[in-house]
Image (cartoon, rainbow, N blue to C red):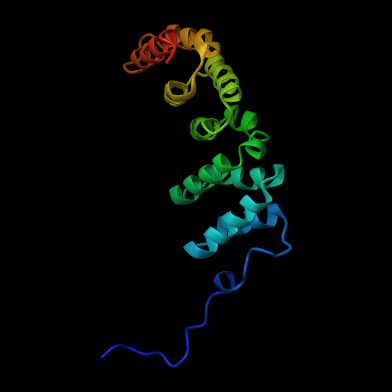
Length: 182
């Protein structure tokens, strides 16, 4: 016999309170996002930030790239990718962040930028990046969206990381693709 509840359970405040249409600022929504554990409420907060899609919303999402919660980090990356013009307001700072993990994650956000913008941002990152994993992430994105404008930065990174196990080969692959016009 199925269990029939006479009354629905009392929902938590965050899950019960509709997010869309509330008057909170992007900063307040971003702060709530960091403490929310209910998946539906988190989705509603993300949707509200996506609806705002301005510089403040991008900043509110970007602050969670340091979170220990991988699901939250990934959701914020996806949201920032979905608002490329707003994300551009935070992207240069993310690509220059002191934390290599943040820089690495920022390369994924750059992937959703217009091609010229992504190339310029990632070429600038490659020009001075010292962490091989961050360079590897930038090269991976450039393998998809790279143009000839990225070639000098790719060559410089290849020379700088010549002794790394994986980077020279990955960079050579991208350079070959760019040379062939694909």
